[in-house]
Image (cartoon, rainbow, N blue to C red; front, side, top):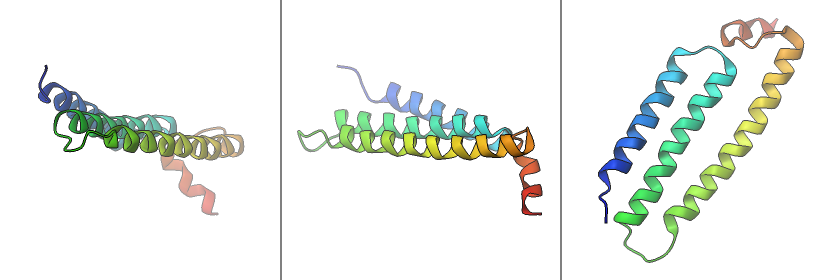
Length: 103
């Protein structure tokens, strides 16, 4: 039986990579990619803790992880619809130029 440390290290790496993408990129699609990486890191933590530290014999971590995946899919659908609408209007999806939409 393996330990929990490799899973936590992988989740920390995914979280840091996602946070780096969100903080440095200004492209809307890359922001969505960074958010997805952060959510996947959270899912990996949920499942790992349920497997190694879970106090019950149930599938609590897996069920909660499934809810996170469903919410992430809904978030991506709405965000991509907004990105496509903005692209049709401006022919670019740079986050810095979205302030011009207020006018």
